[in-house]
Image 1: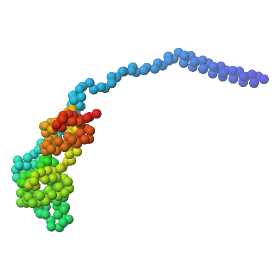
Image 2 (image 1 turned 180 degrees about the horizontal axis):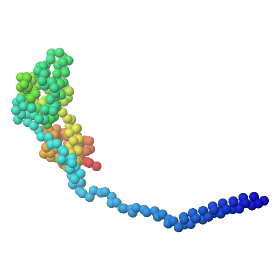
Image 3 (image 1 turned 90 degrees about the horizontal axis):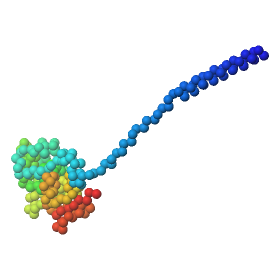
Image 4 (image 1 turned 180 degrees about the vertical axis):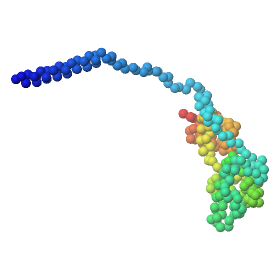
Length: 257
């Protein structure tokens, strides 16, 4: 009995110790200040709106585009000195300009076709970098590399006509005159020019343009023949990117939105 009494007292002491510990923890918890959640103040933002007039807004948004826009002026072949290479032409010069046999038309039909293809592709690239839309064959025959003073080689007018006929067959050119001395080259389609004019006008805030405006923009399309510029205007109206602003169909108003 005495031993049971001692065990009971021991258990009671343990309970008492636990109770005391719990009381202490409760007291500490009660004395500890409660954490306060701090919320960030809500800032009311103003909606971004365009308060500028349409044209001024797009001019302000396209300052970067305006600074990097390349103005393409037509370079007259008549002003190029014979034998000299224009800086625009240097990057497109192929490696075969040092090969004398490139100035001779092969007799084999397959080789002749390849010869026409090679010179035809280069003639288009040549016109593009000089922003030429109408080539005078006599003027072309006097400039490098069609006249190669280093190799003492020169493409004759009949050879240039053969190249021209090849481009016409490929629908990349057409004769500009009845004497077949001038060639209208299409190194870019009129639809592509129409797209460029539309984007350029949008970026620079032009809501309406005339044929005169397109010429004065000093861009790659500015040296196009007037009849082609008129066709481009009709293409934009047909594609619903613009509407006629006058009865004479010389002014269009763009439909940007």
